[in-house]
Length: 528
View 1: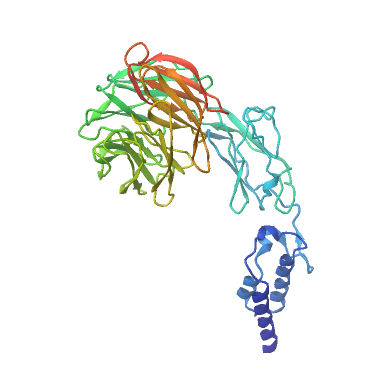
View 2: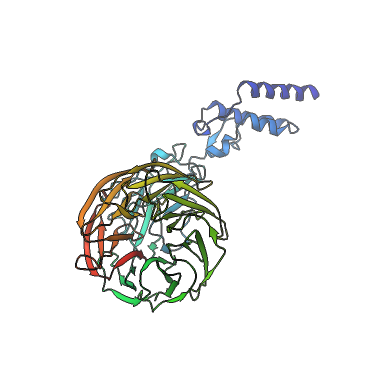
């Protein structure tokens, strides 16, 4: 008996030294694969020698069986595939409401998916229902275009994202056909169609800070982009910055010449707001609301101030101040992961500053990164993937600086600068992350420059500069579906004092004017 065990042990060591090395299991699922059959030999060795060291055999024979979805319990000495067992394990549990317009849809399967069998209609503007994965609003008479799907969970999860994003308050279904295959080449056992997914009711209200002492608000038609009549409530003179609570319950506004923070509840039926309340001795710069916590961040001279927000009344309460940046801290933006916060300066330095955000929303570790030859960094923005940050050189000649973001520390690395025809006051990125807009402020003729974004490098490439626009274009906001933009024009007089809505060409990002409305000295814009 001892000799038999010693012989087996030596045999194992020999195999380990001669053939055992890291394998790409994805190439080992062929029924004739030597590695696959070796694994079955090990099963037989274990069965006939119950005292053998199973750990050594597991090291020698990778556990291909479960990866390949095969079974060795078939009563013979060779593997057999569960060829009829490629199924979708995600089940329909009823209709889904308040589904994000950005998706994504996720589906789990019983085995790894063959990526080559994932075929979608990726042509923006096409309504063809083709491919193994389809998304439709009308029971598949027509379909929407899709971003190339991705895989997760060891390739057993399919992640599907419409591109452009879905329209608000619309109902969609997903169909996965039997053309989808497992890694072993087994077709999906049966076609799968989901229940209804109804998207969230977003992109319907617009709020604008008025520099003359107003907060303006109006409706936005989610289908056409047409703006409704503008209403206004009184706010302090030089109100320039505005932010919304993510679920659309509250609006916050900041004048840039006082240290008061103003807030108001939003009527959930009409979008109307009352005259705002305020707290004093706080801050006087840009605003950004945490995506998941009831915390508002505001810039001030050499400070970032967090405010906890009462979720019933909207009342802000000042928290622990983080010291950092410059005396001219201004625009502020939060990383999509909510791990980092960034802010720019309006003068006295060209740095973009960052801080780490803890799980409770507290701030620490200020890091600064230079924009190179720019004189300011004004209002930075981040792509939806969280990989790149962009900042404009307001009043200077450098244009837009773009940085890579370290996903662990949040530190920025300057990649370069791209020029713009008119110095930009602010930059905005569409929700799909494909287009960047630089808002060039001038009197009498402002410019909006449209750039396409390279998703790998972050490089902005100029698509078009729309020149000769009204005076003092200031800020832009884009609705969550990425179809419409609203721009504030801040100059008093015939060519200013207005907000303009635009439709966004989904292939090029170019803007087409839809509605022009009067709104006194319009500044920053927010859409819910």
